[in-house]
Image (spheres, rainbow, N blue to C red):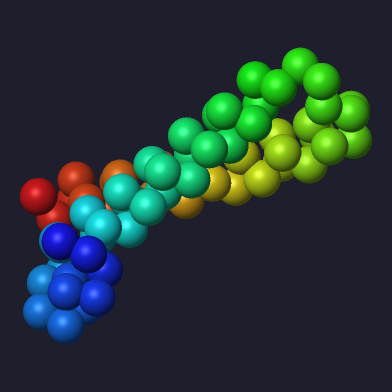
Length: 69
């Protein structure tokens, strides 16, 4: 199910699951970027900050999903 279908159907659980799926995807991309050992220190710091934000969003989506399960 994609986000458009979830929004059209107005199914809360499906919307939250789709949001968490998106957070999982972006979280994996940040984790992959953090493994790059050739990054400049300033670039790595920006990626770490972004990852912290993504992780917090993922945790909120997961908690919300579990609260309505």
